[in-house]
Image 1: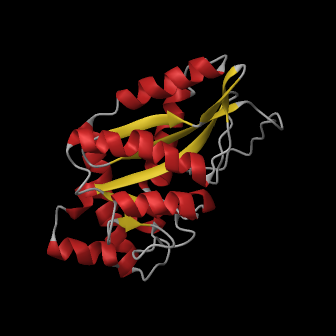
Image 2: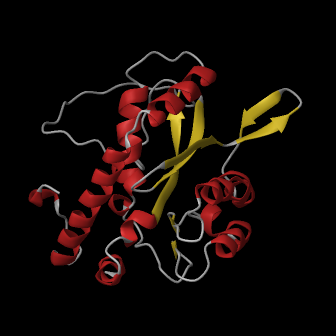
Length: 226
């Protein structure tokens, strides 16, 4: 696994990875299990009806072992104000260019950051790919259609999927939110409460889990407790 091979050369390399993703936060608290895993010891045998088209916001976040970027919400300006919009390669590229890259530059770590994303079309189509290659050249991108490819269908290898979204939604939905403004404020507030010690622990745990995955030759590792 290239991740572990890189660590043989630089054991501090994982701390430079910016793990990124976006997720929907529904106003009614519905959770998309495609990008949020919830583990339980028993089957609750329960069903909960949800509206077919629940209002939601789409948030992008990125984090390293030291800090969090975001959240940034996907929206566009109309005559009636800001409205939620679909994530496209164009607005994803603008988010990176206008928000993510300047903040990394302000932190003084743009030149050393390794950018990780999943292989969604919006992330790998030409507008986004061109911008990413400009700011993260060479082997400083982990993604489909880049020199270092992220394994397909592996949500547990993206720490946003494996940890951040489930952790964040568990806290956001503990309180009552009645509109999109309150939902966004709750997301911002709970992200700001995540301590750097937790980020470091998540990354360190990921390294252990990746080693188990290699030892198991890609098989499931749930029984190992990692």
